[in-house]
Length: 370
Image (tube, rainbow, N blue to C red; front, top):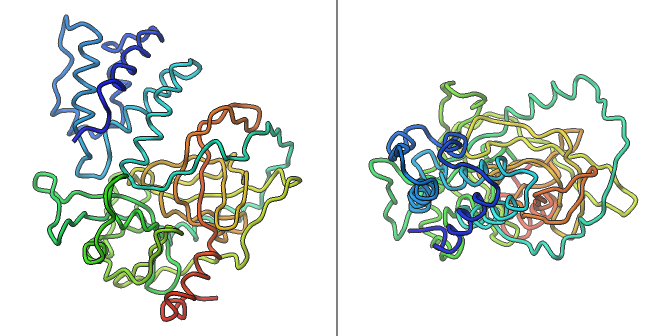
């Protein structure tokens, strides 16, 4: 398979030429953070090869690699590096739009039309950001109930393999009730954008063969995996799935009971996200993360997330879950804190999810603390 058409690859080459970037010299920076085992397996830089030829060779290999055994997509990481290396230039927008499109394609996460976003005002917030010290202590306790998810893909009952390893889709989940974990439906669905959704039996197989890793807080740490028994409740529209997990003893996270709303006068509503971006060790986004809009079922906010962050809890400053993070979209000509921003994130209001579970899966709802 190929993610990008040849015309888009030619756009990349032309953009780097216009930005006066010598790709051969900068190649290590463009390939940074991609799985080193994969890097070792591709051809090294060829001495004397024209710069554009080396770039075309690398992009060809990146474009033909669907994903790696750790769930990462090399082209996605390359594009993120390209954005950093062209920051401040018009050319960076080409890579930004391509990253947005690719992220939706590889995760199957929902899209929203950026032209409908209300996030168009420049807001400079003058606010005392100091918090009690136990804010950090409470955050550490909450973080212990957030886990990395790895979902294998099944097609017509047959598991997709990547060589000798299962093909994995990664995400984040958190404890919503004793023995129950919640994440996004599109994480458990394990399909790329444009593909038919997983058949019901494949969805159930994917859930029952998935694994969670709590306390995966740094590279090199060994943590036990908790295996998922089944998917108990789900809805593609609200993009949630509730999973039963074997031997789950972590405490459920506290939730708000009414949707978080934002009026025109509310310029400062911070949220925090605990996540496993790209399946890497747990990270937290707690700075410059403000709510920008709230619709009937959706909350929007500025923050830092990546593929693998889907399913993360979006938390207020009392560490209560206000939304289930779903994805992000590129947002051009949007100002925040006096600067252009690249992304607006969105999640589903957690009370909307709970209401749907009560109506549709009452037996599951009875297990979720009120």
